Length: 346
Ligand code: MN
Image (cartoon, rainbow, N blue to C red):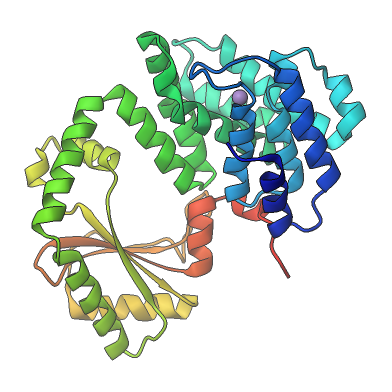
């Protein structure tokens, strides 16, 4: 559990203007309000709002978001009132806490039959201030990280289903891919534990078998880019997520063994001209897989995602997916709207 001074110091480190006094008071207020309440894990309840705040500091969110995270369950679950919060922390914080409380209430009322699309629209409409939704997503993420402590199978599955149907698409809509990927994987683990385990085992096997393949591809990509006159590009490789592999198996109705592209590579460069330069180098060095090229730089996705996508037959004769983007585009792709609330020095 992160300590009070650590939390405050972390926020101050990226946002020196944050209200240190209010952060300290929110910490103490929430801890006292939750008192001896416990989580399903047996931990003090206060560990939950504290961890939600901690998740948001990793996204470098502003002081008001962190204070809201600390207070987010006090009105719903303790004796504390909204008036009290407004009196102690001001109108802005009260409005944010009220927003999160209202979202939690419609969540409680929602039932299985509710159409996910309508529910998502309602959640979006109720989050006039996007920070409300960011706190709610971090709240859901921590609840999913601790889902295993809930004893009732039915309740765990309901929460995981709701995460998959409501919060994963919301995170996607907001362009928050890091959040989306983590929520999706946690929900997948609950809903299809066996499928996930066997895909992971297969990925482990492939990783061992082809241990030197990825470094070889990385080295060759580095060389090709440098030969082509592009300096400063950073190439990285990663496995696709078990869930995305599973979806593809379902969609194409194929077994894992038949999937040829489980690796994805990413090239980060300085500016847009470099993106097309890198693309030109890759396309002239390797056979292009038809139909895989997409230009989300000239036509960004509605959630502001920008990147070039292409698929080629790589150095080891297997299909590899490639994303090419600038470092700025990459930050937006990972954090989405949260990137706009990130405190930026200068
Ligand atoms: Mn909560």
